[in-house]
Length: 215
Ligand code: TMP
Image 1 (cartoon, rainbow, N blue to C red):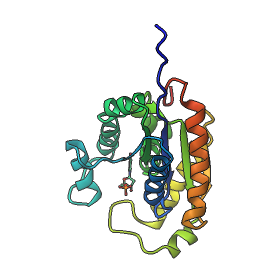
Image 2 (image 1 turned 30 degrees about the vertical axis):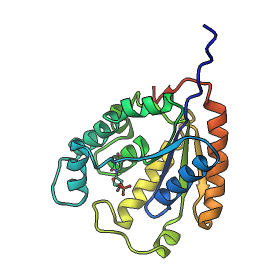
Image 3 (image 1 turned 90 degrees about the vertical axis):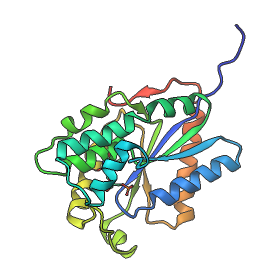
């Protein structure tokens, strides 16, 4: 009918091990995009504000115990419950900058004994596929210089090391647009790399349909 389809926002995910600076960089990216006139919003997973998110939060704070498969499915359900909101915002042209996504879900659970990558990926198959996933790479020695671990579940160096290995396996998948960012640079250097990749992704994907993850 002659009406131009409006451009969708991009789905941009930041992943990485603990203390790589994901949250700081997500906030800076959203600010930079907004300041250049591009609508952008931040999200994070787990989203602890929902009913499911509260179950996850209590588990992470060690206030409750949950069976390992069960908590994996709750993390996934927490993403699925946000999908309608995510799709709506992307369609409205809002770029979403997401602090952790299904990749954290798979890396953390598959680092536990008895879990394979394939089982861990299943519940997240078909989620909105990120247009760009940036992995903030930081070696354990440099991470240690940034201070102690917190007291939440998973915050030990042995577990984080196996999580890192699982991320490396996931990054071999060419169906996902992975970019590795050197997170040992200063905050502004990391931000400059992230901004460049993000602007490219926004320009390249604005006229393409949103994909389905691992499908
Ligand atoms: P946060 O510190 O970024 O809030 O993340 C909370 C913890 O939850 C972190 O240790 C990573 C872990 N996690 C999972 O185990 N599965 C998931 O699906 C996600 C998103 C995070």
